[in-house]
Amino acid sequence: MGERGGTTFIVVLLGLFLPAVGCGGGGADPAPTPAGGATSPRGGVTSPAPAVAAPACATTASVGMNLTAVSYYSPEWPFVDAMRSSRVNAKGYPWDLSGGGPEPPLDPQGYPVGLADGQSATTYTLMGGGHPAGRYVVLFEGAGEVEVRWDGGRARHAHGGGGVARFTADVASTRKGLTVRITRSSADDHVRGVRVLLPGFEATHEAEPFHPLFLERLRPFSALRFMDWGETNHSPVTSWSERKRPDHRSQDGKNGVAYEVMADLCNRTGKHMWVCVPHRADDDYVRRLAALLKDALDPRLQLFVEYSNEVWNGAFGQHREVTAAARAEGLEWWERYARRSAEVFDLFERELGGRERLVRVVGAHAANPGLTERLLAALPRPDAADALAIAPYFGGRLGSRRSWRTTRGWSVDQVLDACAADLERQRDLVRRQRALAREAGLTLVAYEGGQHLVGVGEAVEDGRLTELFVQANRHPRMRQLYRDYLALWREEGGGLFVHFSSTYAPQKWGCWGALERQDADPAASPKYSALAAIAQEWARAAASDAGAR
Image 1 (cartoon, rainbow, N blue to C red):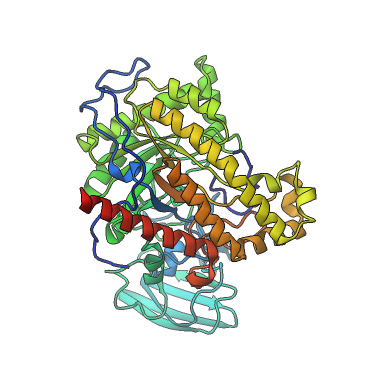
Image 2: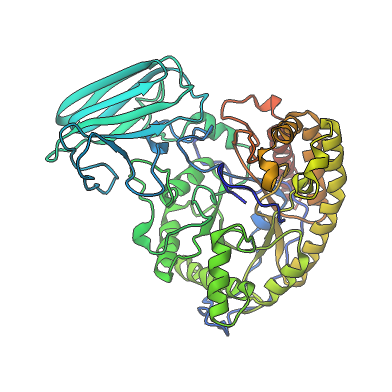
C-alpha cells in the first residue's frame, strides 16, 4: 500500500523530550528464535552474532502509525518551515522555470545557481489547504529577489547579499496554498536557504523543526513506519549518493525524506523507527544507511528494517523488477525477495554490532497464507528474520470490480454492517498467518492495516461510491469497528500494529487517514480517537504487566 492520489489502489490483499521507551499493551508471547549464525547457502552474509529473541516492541501488542508522504499538497504539517515540504518535480528540473534561458545548475541544497535576466524559478507549498493564516516570515540568503504569493496577496523582497534577508507575508488564506518564486538570483551569490515559516515559529524553527501539532497527534503511538516518507514504492534509488540530504531545500520528491530527519523525529518523540530499504539499493547503500542510523537513532529505540514494501503486490514497480531479476536466475520472485531480505538484515546486523535493537521484518500478503508459507520456506536459514508482517485490512471487497456496482446502492449502515461481518474473515486470516509465523519462530506484526474502503478500476471514478465510503469513514460506528478490529488482532496474538495512515484527505483514491487534516478535532475523528484510546490502553496494560513481573 502507500500509493498517493493519481494511482489506483489495487485491492490485493507531545513531548519534545525523550519519554520512557515502551511498546504498549502486552498479549502476544515472545516467539522463540532458533539458534543461528550459519552462513546463507544463497550468498547471504554470515551472521556475526548469536540469535536473540525478537525485541519486546515487536512481540507486544501496541499501535504504531504509518506517516503520510511529505508533499506540497499534503494536509499534514510535519514542519514549521513550509519550504521543507515544497514541490520537487518527480521528473526533470526540480523548479518551474519561466522567462527563457537555460536551466541553471543546482547547488547541493537544490537551489539554482543564478538565473538569466528575466528568468524566474517557482515552487509551491501548503497546497493541501487548512494551514493557518497569519504572518509568515520569509528568510533567505544571497543576492536576489524572492516573492511569495497566496490567495489574494503577494509579498516580495530584494536583497543585495551578505547576512540573512527577512520579510513578512500577512497571509489571510491558504486555501490555494503558497507560491514561492525566486525572481532574481546572482550567479556569484545565488539565492539559497529560503525558509517560509508558519506564524509564530521564527524564534524556534531551528531548534524545533517539527510542528507541535504534528508531534501531538503522534503522541499515543509506539512506532513510526516511514514507507511513504521514504517514497519506497517504485523507488529509483540505487546508490548512497542519490539519497536525500537533510539540508536539501525540500523533503518532498522521489528520493524521499532524509534518514537523519526520520531519526530526529523518532528521537524527539521516543518512537521506534521502521525503515523500508529501497529495492534497488546496493550493498554500499545498505551499509551506509545502517551506520548512519546506528549513530543517529537513540540507542533506546528499536529499529525495524524491511526490504522495500509489498514486493508481493503486482501494482508496484518493486514487484515487477524483483520478479524479472528472479526469473533471470531461474528463481521465483519470493525466493529472491527472501534472499535479499536476509542479505539486507545481515548487513544491518554487522553495522549495528548485533541485533539487540534490530527487528528484521519480512512482508507478506495477509489474504494469501499459501504465499506466506512459500516465502518463509525460502528464507536462507531459520534465524534470518524476527517478524512476519501482514496488512489485514477490512472492507476491501466492497469496492472491488465484482462488488462495487452493488455496494454503490447501499446505505452507510449497510457498508458498516458489511465491514463488521468482514472482521471475522480477517480474524481467520490473522490466525492462519500467526500459526505460520510461530512455526517459523517469528512474531506476527502488521505493517499496515485499517479500513480499506476504496473503488478499484472504473469504480474509482464513481462519485456516488466515493461519497458513500467517505461518509462511512466519518460515521461514529467506525470507531467501534476499529476497537473490535484491534481487539481481534490482540486476541489472536498479533504484536505491533501499524495503522495506515496518519493524515490523508478523503478522496476517490481512498480514506486512509486516521485524520483528514492535521488540525482536525481528534474527538470527532472516529478512527483516530479509537486508535489513540487503544494505544493508551495497551500501553497501560503493558506497564502493569511489567510492574507485576
